[in-house]
Length: 292
Ligand SMILES: [Zn+2]
Image (tube, rainbow, N blue to C red; front, side, top):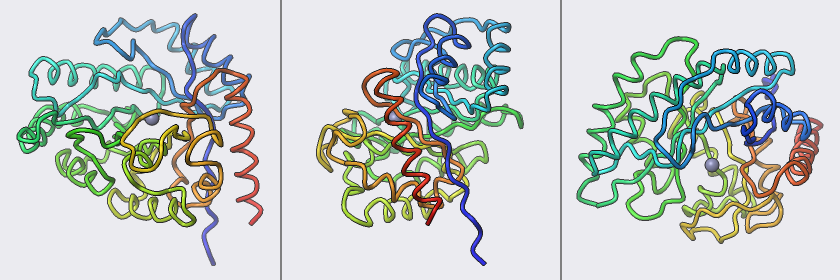
């Protein structure tokens, strides 16, 4: 007998301005999200604002009450492989801070971008410094800490993960620590040159990811269409169905066992009206998969 495949939750990145519990949960209710992603600090800065335990408790209780799973996206500036000492040190501090904030709000995962060595000659050193800086941080995590989720970028420049195969190097650097997982962004992977648009392409890409990372590490999907063609190396998200990927590949995605532990989170343009429509679209596709 075939084990029935669990189907993933569906949701979106939500704003937090005006208070995380009020704004992001209100947003989630409006668009009918079953999972959300939030920033816990300015995504374009290094600031590590102090936590507000009452606000965190309010957020956690709301998530529990409404059965919403939460994820954190750490700042975009984080680049653990940077050749610049200041950037590297800030990246470690910001990653550790985000993991701590993720635990405070009851998040299941904290996403960081896999980053770039900037200069080709820095690549070997990049893997060494990632190991040296991150292993003590990972070792300090407790059972109820979120997982650190590595999100491959669009493959531009000296990206440490140009194609999914390169994730192996990142996982090796982090000694396949059990608290390390993967977040797959459909726009990024398409831009990096994995043709998820052609029939069977999404399935093949997810099969590869399972082979490289192991199914249990695939913890989150960023469900985005792309403004640019496959292999463009450009990171420009588009609303589902309005970009170069189209909606068909998302049916393949929802039907794949790799997403059983991995909610789909939209990071597409727009606000409640657009995201509400996209959540409904993905749920309809999921219902189609469930009937098969
Ligand atoms: Zn993303």
